[in-house]
Length: 250
Image (cartoon, rainbow, N blue to C red; front, side, top):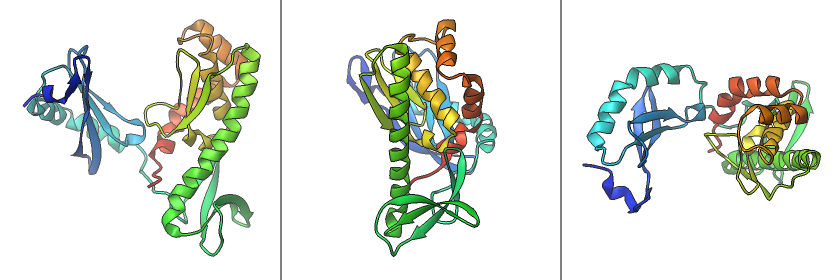
């Protein structure tokens, strides 16, 4: 059986998704046929939230299964090093701008979510029905990300003298931000959990792409001019980003 049936048209293929059990986890596996691929490649999504296998045209499901079995040991080792995938719920802590906040549920009040402070430290108070707690925490992070990032985009674009076509927010597992050739910026709202310096770096990084659509020396020079702590923030995101991506919001 080949993946030829997945084609919608000559130059595009629809990905096939199924569950794959490995290392005590059941992960969504996405199989993508690529005309330019010459071999099978395997990628773990940020935070260990899923797997992606890219295959050349005509590869059979049996070949994919054998490929996954050959790489089982490598997958198990890599997944074992990833952080657990905690689900947002009352009693756990999630970071806001790098500061851990205890999630407190107060069902007797109306409203969304708000920060507060107790003798035990910062808290994120979530109101309303328990069924909607995860969504309300995510909505809170989206609002915080939008407020801070839009202000930073305005500041950095004014510095470089280039306007962004748009600013969008997504929950992406493969990247924290992106910039299209026509100037549309996108950011993962999960970055609201990172320290302010890291948020500033991410925005500076994408705004720098409005001038330099590459990662060459000129790009990094501009990025460091916009955010002097670029190297520190970049290292923090590489070290801690997977843990932020692993947090489950339902």
